Amino acid sequence: MSALLSSVRQRYFRRTSALRSVCAATVCALSLSACIDVSMPDYKRPDTPAKASWSDQKGSPVSAAATIEPDWWKGFHDPYLDTLIAKAIAGNFDIKVLAARIDVAGTQIGEAGAGALPTMDIGAGASFEKTTHQTFSKQYNLATQVNWDIDIWGKVEKGVQAQKAEFHASEADWRAGYLELVSNVSSTYFQILQFDDQIEQQQKTLETNRQILAIYDGQRRNGLVPQTQVLRQQAEINRLTNQLLDLRRSRALANNALCTLIGVPAGEFQMPKGHLQQRVQLPSVPDGLPAQLLARRPDVVAAEFRVLEAYDLVGQAKLAQLPTISLTGHAGTASFALTDLLKSFTYGFMPSINIPLLDPGVRAHVKVTKAQSTVAEQQYRVAVMGAFEEVENALVNLNSHKQQRVELEQEASRLQIVADQIQSQLRLGVVSQLEVFETERTLLEAQQELLANHQQILSDTVLLYKALGGGWPSVDVQAQVKEH
Image (cartoon, rainbow, N blue to C red):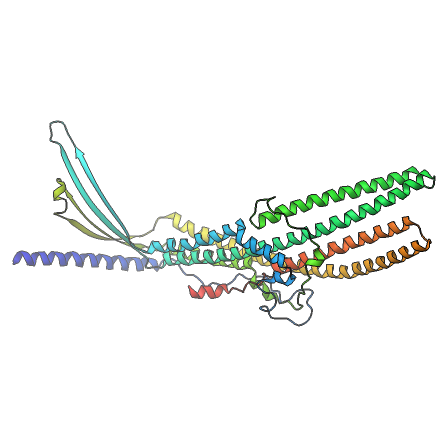
């Protein structure tokens, strides 16, 4: 009976000692933590210059949500363009890389949170030993150990929050890549169609100049014009032929770029010929665009999430200055005979506290994370200022090219009237065939400029939609902070 009471007293004493050790360690840790600055102010978006509206603001402001549709490219009313964009979204490898990075960031959230969970190791072994004049000895052992670093200060949780911010930033990177891809497919498609029209018109211009050359050559033989006039016209044909070859080369390179965008090996896909003005309609961009549309830009959203990530990493580094408390339990068995291995066991429990009093690396890391946080804030401001410039430039280009379109249309219309009248005068014998060809050449050049202007307006519209966030919903990063 006395032996039983003694055993109970020993177990009680061991448990009481362990609890006292844990309590003492906790009190000591709390006392030391009061001497360390681990305060963190509430997160605030980095300040940037304010911008209430754009410089060419016209009309009353419109709703940001109603300005740009998520599938804004359908405003060009071109089913073939819709098909190309669908292929690109499904097959482009750059967008797949960005999607894979989202998966990486998502799994790293679990990895960051694993630091707050207990770890367990188990091992088994055997030793065999023979010494001179001694008998051969052998021993078998089996052991396990459980260790738990208690996250009493929330250091691990800060790391989890930082990784969640990186996950959201990776999602925004994917959206930015998606928007970049759609914009590049659209612009490349418009460019290829423009090349098709330019090649066709260049061939017409070349044929007209050959006819002019034939007239000059006939006049030279009759002594009406000098040889230099013929040579000058031949040189003009050489110039136009060189331009035609360059247009064909540029069309082939643009087609190769389109292949890569839609995820097809270059040269394995040939876009059929078409006419830009017949296929693609100019969408109307509403006046009164609100500056709040920049909240939809994925690159700006990603930059702010990385500011939040840096903010959380500063908090984690500060909390790393505090003492850490660990609980370690171990159990095992050993025997000289394998059959006796599971007959006796030993176990133990050891709480411990680690106080980083003289660890300069910990405090240096706090300074590093603060400096990195400053970099993230400045990068956010760079993204915002760049966004302002891109929108302003897109609006300037779009409005300027639209104004130029009015002048080019009037020029082409008037030259067409001149060409029709010259043709009528030719039938009456008032003018020569040479004057007719010269007029047609001037008209073709004006039509080329009008075609290039059409492509510029389409590309300007794409760049404007891209600069304004391309229809993605706005993201409130500060609301994400509250969810943490």
